[in-house]
Amino acid sequence: MSDWIKVAAVEELPEDAFVVVPAEDTDIAVFNLHGKFYAIEDVCTHDGGQLTGGAREGYELICPRHGARFDIKTGAALTAPAYEPTATFPVKVADGVVYTRDDRWD
Ligand code: FES
Image: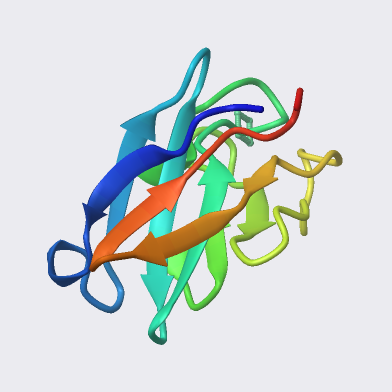
């Protein structure tokens, strides 16, 4: 099973903020949206762009390269030119610290 990765202390990740942390072979972006934490792979499934370089509208993250939109809650690709979802990851909070892990190959 993959190890949990420390993201940040809860107070370091206020509402509407995000943090990108390196995982084993990718980057994971963890968002605090309306007080709930969501983790997605920071990679656009269209052509590998870094999603967190783009704008965010509500729960949608807009790829800065060609404008595909992704649902931060589910990873779903919402608009072309991306058609495949980006990965989502579990998040836990323990002792005031936010953690995530890449569980795709557990
Ligand atoms: S790389 Fe993201 S839309 Fe093309």
